[in-house]
Length: 308
Image (cartoon, rainbow, N blue to C red; front, side):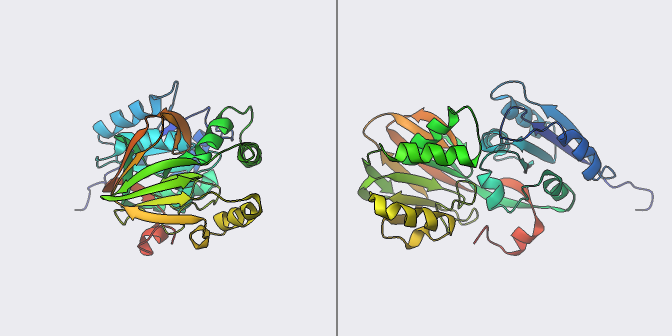
């Protein structure tokens, strides 16, 4: 009707000032410059302590915000996303982390200004998420070698890709594969594995594709099992990881399922969306189909698949 104003969209932008590798001081000004203020009302809130992003996002969803923006690394994205699961509020991502696995999978630009443009022209899609012992994750969780690397990396004084590679090489020289019992939708396996990664999205981050064919809209978890391999094979495996060809290697098996139960020998370190933490020996991973709304570039939804 003539005279009626278009409903303005309420966006809450959550900045984690201590996450990731980049300085976020310029982000508020970028938001003011890039985001279309004619149709959006943007509130910017900085986190003050661990878990604060989840609290802010939960309150924003309760207050009816259409979009909550996670500005930080994969851990910040996990906090915000966890609060939005099962709500009508959409998650948006401005990637400022060292890996940015979920953002890369969803084709969100790594440049902050371009990523903010998605708030103007993006489309909301429904995507799967996973739970590990009831805790949501959106990209990957894993145990074995990659979890140990994640733990060592988290304790390094500096961040970034080079530091991650150094942590990987140091850990590789001493890591011993372990035995696991795996139940995938009732099918039981016994595996000796270097890595077990359970994946909703295709990559860890930095375009390292641990589950090259994983999508976030198929209602399935991809389980990548990397079997023991010798030193000579490691450069080939590494190359295939970054070339999106890991599933072609005979040291790797990839399974799919809706509910995965993994029994380990003891409580050990795992990584959940890149953050290392100690988890019980008994692990249950389940998929929640189309359980979260995410604001993504329209081209992603036009392709009807994520990163394939």
